[in-house]
Amino acid sequence: MEKINYKKYYPTAAALYFTYFIHGIGASILGQYKQDFASMWGAKLLEDGTFDVSMVVSVIAALGLGRLISLPFSGPISDKFGRRISGIIGVICYALYLGGIVFAPSMAVGYIFAIVGGIANSFLDTCVSPSCMEIFPENGSIANMFTKFSMSIAQFLLPFGIGFVATSMLPFRTIFLIAAVAIAIDGVLIAILPFPKANATADDEGKQEVKKEKMKFTPASIALICIGFTSSSTFMIWLNCNQELGRLYGLADPSKIQSFYALGTVCAILVSSVLIKKGLKAARILIIYPAISAAMLIAIYFIRIPSICLVGGFVLGYAAAGGVLQLCVSTANEMFPKDKGKITSIVMIASSVANYTILNVASYLTKVGGATNGPTNVVLLNVVVTVIGVLLAIYVNVESDKMEKLEKAA
Image 1 (cartoon, rainbow, N blue to C red):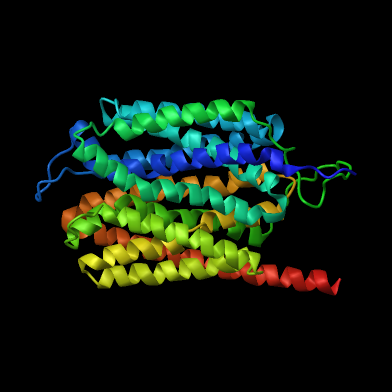
Image 2: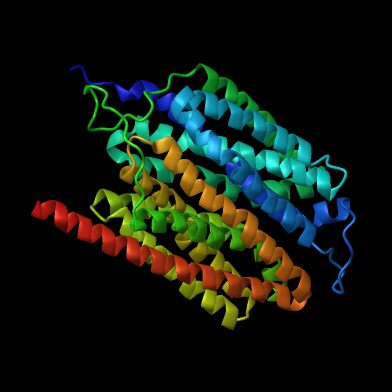
């Protein structure tokens, strides 16, 4: 049987990774412009002269609601009608979200656009992750981690873009609109570039198609899906609530936290890729990195000095956002190689539940705690969720080792 030349799909992979570059902007830019949106939507002033941003945090949480609404059908659409269709829907929705939310006259309208952004995210998830694993079948976990790498590059550059916009006296809408146009152009490429066969793996090239079996969930696979919730919670809480913590601890320029965070994420992906290439199991990283995150969050809570926010930004960028969710998806894809779109949807549903519920809880804690206690209460919330994630990962690894021993014995 003639072996497929995957190199012809590399331009497709580049176009798909670029959607995650834009997603890196879209997922974090609302958190960077909370004061602007709060002012635009008529939020009340706090005792320290800043606006109450709880309504903006609630709108950010709506991104998770949008994903939650659409993931149950975005995965099956991706598996049945093709990755391209899923990707095009995602691109259209993302352009609408980025171009629309900056002109939203109220929180309610902003909330609707955020839901559209979440729908965009879910269709990109079920297009990009499976597609990249199918384009690079021998290195699926690493290929999927590089979706996070693309996001991290964008998040590293974003503060510089924000600084340029500010010094140039341009409206805060500028980056949103540039990103909307860029992803629309990328959508044209996705519409015309070739895609590999859906649900192909490195082992089944050239084999006859076998009858599909119903997905069977084990306690370990359910725990892995739950890690989609905990791993997402850790970095989402930090990504969207670190600015207020920086101000509370006396950091002169809290926007620097974002750059340290993104730099940590880039380092994690490069280091993790090497470790996985050398034989470290992705499931092991699901324990190690969240454990580091939990330790760092505890340190942040007790060591209340400005520099801890920058150190924490780097460490949490490395350990919380450095591809843990992507490795969770990759591990789940390996469990269900014939249902990649569906299992990606299921893990991302857990991630979406985290985005919606956890950020709403964080919004509540921010509101009741005010500028003084709100940010540290959010850190404590993050500690609890992250520790639960570590315990789940330990269970997944124990069960995985048992299965390997049984397979070897057989």
